[in-house]
Amino acid sequence: MKRIHIVGRKNSGKTTLVVELVEWLTQQGYRVGTIKHTHHHHELDTPGKDSFLHREAGSNAIGILSPAMNAVFWPNPNPPEPGEDDASNQADKRYQLFQSLMDQCDLVLVEGDSKTTATKLEVWRAENTSEPMIAKDEDFSALITDDNYTTNLPVLRRSDIPALAAWILDKAGVDTNS
Image 1 (cartoon, rainbow, N blue to C red):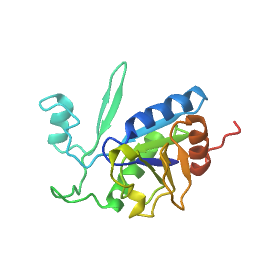
Image 2: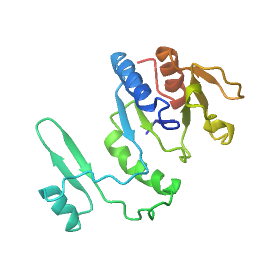
Image 3: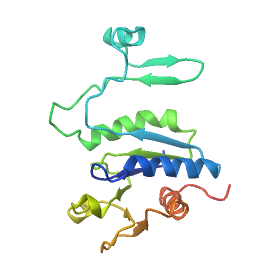
């Protein structure tokens, strides 16, 4: 799975950027998958519904197929304790499970997961007043911003979606000749 993580602090514009990248890339004919990574607990299924009851009964994977949308849920066998960070090796194992679902995609953009060992780019805006994460964590491939910031990493213009998308495709190793 060719995946790139778009990370950043709260209100840095991660979701907006992912949406713009997906729109542009799909207009160019690429098949793009997305994953929203969160460290907050979310109930993804509706309590009391059949699929929820299947999971509560112990099903290892629960699928929902409908005329318009499909979904697969599976419980995390080793969830972190409340307040504990999800160890990146556990997250990497769950990304591997996603791979079979995402194999039809040319690229998968993950919003979040700053602890990943995969390629990650930080989106940053000076108006947030905090310095970028790259100032203390050099395990990033680039900084995405329209503000001035000096770093040894590549600085990609946030407002230039075509150039940013081209850089991401190259970094992910996506064949751009087809």
